[in-house]
Image (cartoon, rainbow, N blue to C red; front, top):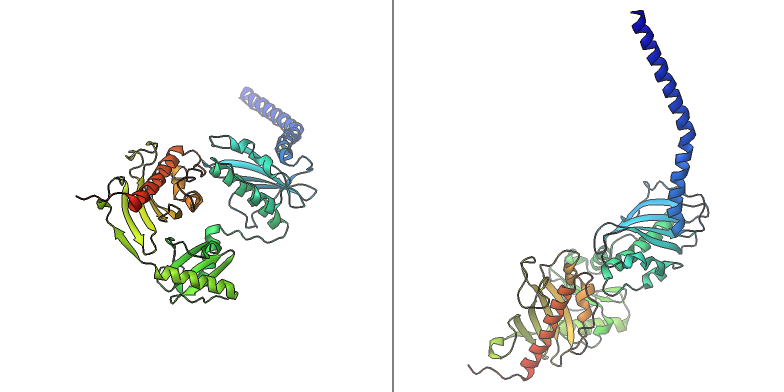
Amino acid sequence: MKGQIKSIVTLVCICTVVAVLLAVTNMITAPIIEANQNAAANEALLEVMPEGKNFQKVDVSGYTLPSTVSEVYKEQGGGYVIRLTTTGYASGMTLMVGVRADGTVSGAVCLSSGETLGHEKTFGQNFVGKDAAGVDAVDTVSGATLTTGAYRAAVKDALNTATILGGGSVDLRTEEEILADNLDAALPSADGEFTKLFIVEVIEGIDAIDAIYTANNETGAVCVVGEQFIGVGANGAVISECDEATKANVESVMAVVRATVVEDVDISAFEGIHQNVISVKKTQSGNYIIDIKAAGYGINGGDKYHAATGEYTYIRVSVTAGGKIIDCLTLAHGETENIGGVCAKEEFYGQFDGKTEADYENVDAISGATITTDGYKTAIGRVFETVKILEGGAENEE
């Protein structure tokens, strides 16, 4: 019995000694480990803010910041280093951006990404020394608009974050939210339901009007003129405050839009029109509205859809009899989201507006979706072929 007690006492003593030794060791090594961790963290922070000192992590829980922001560090000079995660060609592109106290970018690097073309590795160099206006002016890279566009937006988010943390005010609404709010304010009777008008006429003064949105309940429309949103009633009269020149221009444009009449064209009466042309309409002024199918992923501009997409890409194009595109729109598609599916975004299909047969191929390709782009361009080329047939081709006598 005494032996057992002695063993227990000995074991307790050993455990106590070990615990004390571990505690002492931890007291000695913990500061060293923490210092090494801080040094590693500071090394990453210093990469985008070489002049920074004494970085401290900021508790951002009480702020409303861009959704891309994950961590923020402040340095003693008043600058910030912001860690952000965004989506380019693929999700999970993580960036680190330094913002000086004067509101300019001190550096920007990509820490990790699933991008394929490598532009994110060097694109950050374009932002050094830029303020918010300078960042907006940095061009995306042709063929990598998703990657570089997302990078640019993230840098802008970092600048906005620094402004907010510094006590400033920033509008964090998305472009879609800003558009919706402006349309609502210009024409409240629409109840927030609008459809962007597909333009089928070359209207004098239309260059001054960026877009027209019609109310789904037919109570009027909104014309976007630069930064102005001009409400127009169902009778075509301007109801928003604006100068007389703008008012006259908008009402003139809306008069033409309201008077537009289209009729179906029997394409079976013409030889040579491609089988992918779905339908053709013609305005009284002689312009054409052509719906056409474009082959997508896996076809490289051919005439059959790939099993992976399940369907063609459907495109609507309005074009003059002389062969100049007035408007272009992707109606539907079966392409991969965030890759070929970018063909449904105006940033892509809007590039064809104003193009002719001579220059329609000179548009930026969709990053990572060359096949989708080629199929789309092939369809646009067939639109020009169709117009030439309709304008001068021999009618089928059968």
